[in-house]
Length: 147
Image (cartoon, rainbow, N blue to C red; front, side):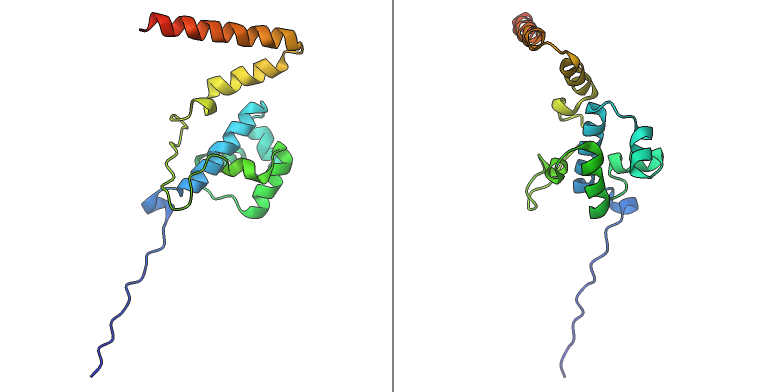
């Protein structure tokens, strides 16, 4: 008599039970970062993308996955290469740990993105250089006062 053992079935991951996939969260975070850097509202992106602004919100949170064809369309709307959405992501075997609000990444904060946008609106290279020099000087001064 041979004994047949059943292989346990693997349960399909669901957002409701497991939360959003970390890769989808990362891609959504990059989407929000680029949209903000361009000064584009969720409504304006939604219109160009052919979805509701609520759908854009879900994409940005990673709650909804963006298909390959839709991601390709986003590269055209946002003028970025496809690799942009995956920059900074961990290797597949590593755990991808990206906070939903991007709190672990200063470069992705709204304040940083607004500063970069304002910087690039300055037409004069000389003025931009002086602004960078000022920011460096203030950063050095700040580090002295906290030690």
